[in-house]
Image 1 (cartoon, rainbow, N blue to C red):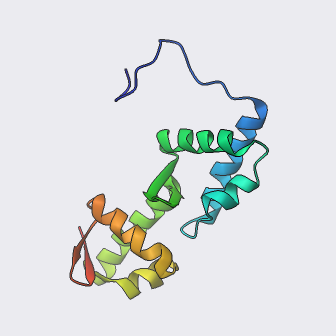
Image 2 (cartoon, rainbow, N blue to C red; image 1 turned 90 degrees about the vertical axis):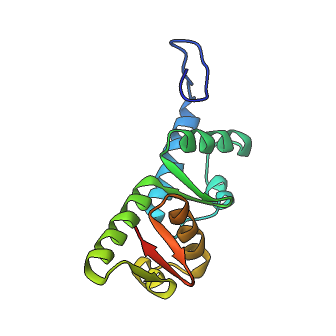
Length: 138
């Protein structure tokens, strides 16, 4: 048993060479995107496997926590989320714990399309807390 998954001992998922390549491509695409991630559809179009297999690979990367699902249509690489946490820690040391949305957008270089879901994710993860129109970095 692993968390809520039950599997046979010694059994693991075996990927074909195309699937392994697709997995690497998905990971690299999201890693290079940073906080301005592409849509699922845009990434899946570039892969050498059909869409259904690519979606399973994407789910595998989410399960392995290589990718982090922030909203239903937004997925980020774990390194981008880690860098975001570091940015917030640095901001807190330099400017205090109050973080208005415009400051967050300037700090991260993202548009409102990404800023609001990221802030909501950070609230769920107890990195920030919403207080009125601002966030407090915890």
